[in-house]
Image 1 (cartoon, helix red, strand yellow):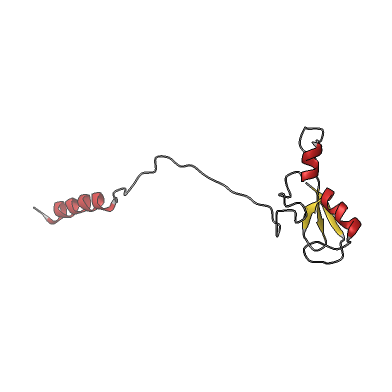
Image 2: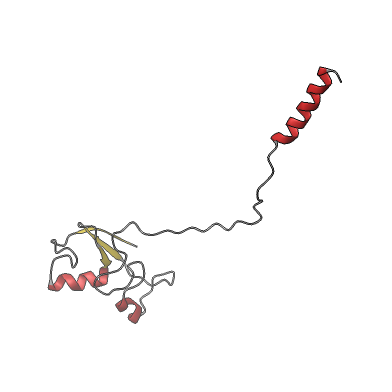
Length: 112
């Protein structure tokens, strides 16, 4: 054999070797996502129910908004603690301080 044909055979062998074998094939993939509110604590310290759910009073009275959802507004204080507005409005009548940090209570924002 001449050098040229030998080199071309080496190239063919090298080309076949350069393609790595698949170690595994992905057949199915299920994506899972998780989210959470960017708050220090997501439970109302007064009624011990999650802040994004209706408080016990609203659940008992079955208060609902126009769309049929339970209507219970969340209130954030200047201290960034969050509570149900129903719970906090009763708390403030007795004590005008945040139940968690005891700072003077001042509303930062309200919403759902």
